[in-house]
Image (cartoon, rainbow, N blue to C red):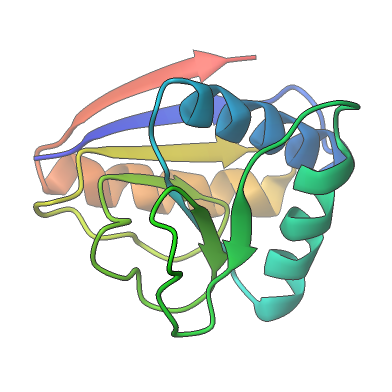
Length: 142
């Protein structure tokens, strides 16, 4: 059963949420993992894709938008709004309003919430969903 971590930001600013997501994705990558970054839409996936190229000078994080095709190089972070492909299910960074898989092989689900009422409400629903699935949940106020 996966562990779930909620990162609750003190800001309403979407740019700061995106910057935090990029830093977290970079940290995951540097620890040797290649997560799937789950988004609500293709547009949001494009925004995260661009942000990962520009958020920190000198940083390189191999990533691409997932459009149903598995990349030849498995050491790639995938970003998308489609079903998570095999091989990228261990760690899910959830920037969407959807519920990621809560069964194996998923090991970690990372939720990043800003302080907007809409985001917090959707986060509360997912929190209850994870509780009902009896997953271990931790919350980090940032």
